[in-house]
Length: 79
Image 1: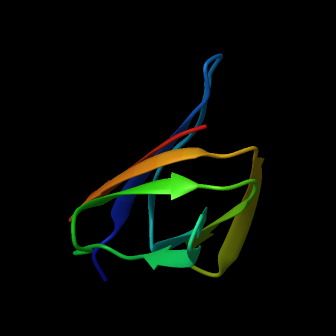
Image 2 (image 1 turned 90 degrees about the vertical axis):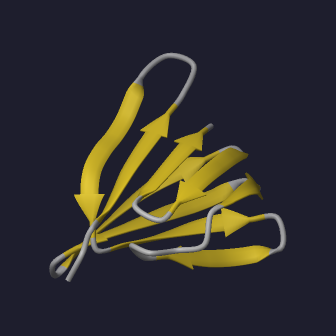
């Protein structure tokens, strides 16, 4: 299964930089699941939890909001 590269960046540091199976982000319009091959878009994020899935593991990251830039093989999150 193709992976999607995900980076989670804050003003101070890089929190996450991994190739994932799927990532779920808290969009202002609701949760959005991102897989490799996703349609490119920019998403405004609300306060909530990012869920990063790799094999049989789920990692969670709390954010205060921000933006996600999504391409077919990459998801860059600025929070």
